[in-house]
Image (cartoon, rainbow, N blue to C red; front, side):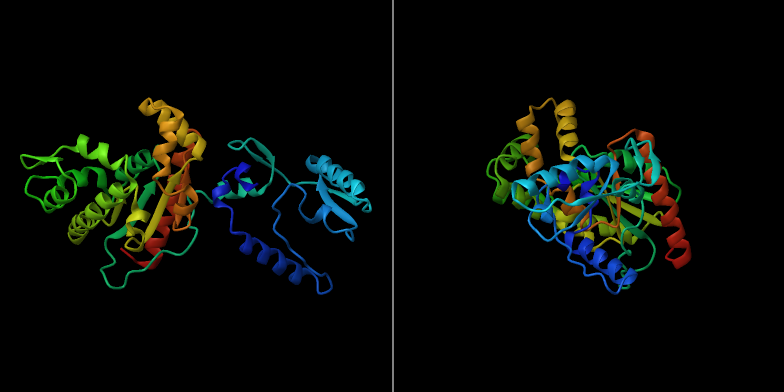
Length: 327
């Protein structure tokens, strides 16, 4: 049910939300009994518990309250008193909303620190390492460009770095030759032939990634060991899949809803909807990436809105680094 809501990927787990309700009730009253339940259908417990006496609605949800009473009548239950409350005014031009809502609150969280950074006392505090990841057509490259133009920032493009792993005579060439017959010719990898194999076979794709990721991380660590800047950003789509999120100080993730990803991939790559959906199946979901993230962006709207989110993240980052003297 929540997947129809704006930025639903940022909604807290149901257990967290239930605990928040119970804590609030306990804070404001010592006589009210709280029985919080997850709602898995449009009516929730309102049409299951005969003893209920009232339901709280807003002007926008009065029809929902009427629908509840209709079902209760069909079940020979008492009619609920509808208590209508006013919503607080609050304009959100991006979401096109005029009332304060959980959706506007989630949008306000974009670009903000969602959980404490990961400390790494085993290594020098400089450089401060940020991982930047996102699914296909999520807008990750645009954010990487913004970060690359920030003073004191260095961005490692892992797609470009990966190309160096395919140099003739490299360790990766030997590994690929042993696992993928016929794709290494005269010391060079036929990447088109390799791609035709791995994108048809999930197990082969996983094998290639397992060969590539450790080598890439070695190269990243070499760059980090002699930093040119105070902040190093590792731009890679598969940071979480590779397990690198435990290596960085902060993971920054950019996403758009799956429907938008499919639309962008179809438009950008000239694919059918089924082909675009197949590409997405090989990736983690937005929700899975966000679960590991410290800062989240959404590039669904105008470029200026995405830039605003990144600027917010940069302001907060500089404040954190200055106060902690991390660099």
